[in-house]
Structures are given as C-alpha cells and as structure tokens.
Amino acid sequence: MELLCETPVIEEYLVESEEVNYSHFTIKEKAEELKAGSLNEIDFVKRAFAFVRDSIAHSWDIQSSRITCNASEVLHFAEGICYAKSNLLCAILRSKGIPTGFCYQRLTLGDTPDSGYCVHALNAVYLQAIGKWIRLDARGNKAGIHAEFSLTEEKLAFPIRHEYGETDYLHIYAAPNPKTIQSLKQSTDCISMYLQGLPTSL
Image 1 (cartoon, rainbow, N blue to C red):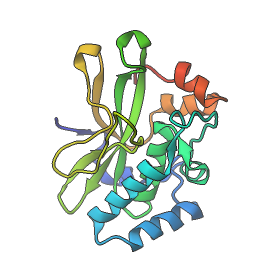
Image 2 (cartoon, rainbow, N blue to C red):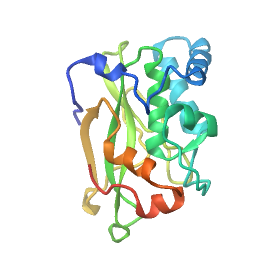
Image 3 (spheres, rainbow, N blue to C red):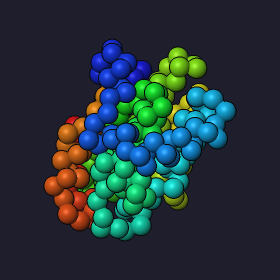
Image 4 (cartoon, helix red, strand yellow):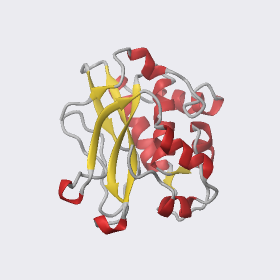
C-alpha cells in the first residue's frame, strides 16, 4: 500500500497548532526526556510511540467521561481517544523536528457492520534514517489489539476488513481532520460521544 502525502512540502508536517501545541512546557519536557534516553532518531520515535500507546489510557477502555483534545491536555490527564492520542504523539515528535502527519481508517464501531461506522485516527512519521513514511497506531493495546512499532511491516491496531465496508484512507494529512476535532470540542461526555458522536467518514 502506497501512502500519499497531502502536501509535498515537508515543513507542513512540522507546523504547530492549537491541537498540536508542542511549545507547551510539558510537551517539551516529555519530548526531551524521551529523546535523552534514545540512541538515535528511530529509537526516539519508537520510545515516543510506546509512551503514548502504553502510558496514555484510551478513554473508552477505562470508561472515562472526560474528553481531551490538545496535546498538552492529553498529556496532563493521561487519557484520550485515538483523535487525542494522535495529537499528542504528533506534538512530541514535531517538537524534535520529526515530520509527523495524521492518517485515518473507517471502521465498524463494534464488531459487525450493523453497529455502524466510525473514523479512527493514527499517525504517519517520516524517518530520515530510512527515507520513508511509516504509520503508527498509538490507540493502546488490549485483548485483541496489538499495535507495534515496525520498520518493515505495518502492525496497526485494526486490520481493515473490506468485506465489512471498512476503509484505509491513504493520505497523510498535515493537520487533524476537522470532523474529528469538532467531535471532541462539541461533546461533553466521552462515552456518549464514542457511541453516538464520532464521524462515520472523512
């Protein structure tokens, strides 16, 4: 599968925004901490991915009603859904000059198509050491979900089931999708939002 950059300007994948607020002191501190313990660029990305995947809880998994959005907010409360967690991973990596974008999938909300559909967010990272983009899904592992860091084959949280109408969107976007951010900002309860308030397509 060939990923498609939304823009050929690599600097667009380093931009700071309200959601990817990497100048916030907590983001800078966490990025520096992760970088200090890393051997090289690839090791830093791997450590940052593992931190967001494992140390930031997925709100649905812990049945939390709290909604987080901006990277610093996600880090402070140590929780968020995939949209929020992708903001945090992007901010940590961009703060150290590593181009990072947003990717999406259209998945069934439950296990079958009759449960409806939702948009799932993950990240793409450009690794200068190997000269290519790789996708990383920091959603958070649990029984049946095993996303891993890999340079050779994708190990995402959710394999696409085309027979269920699921879709891999191939573009790497420089900014979070407006529909996903709107869901976070307009909702007041994460459980209700997760069940009824997520976008069903880009």
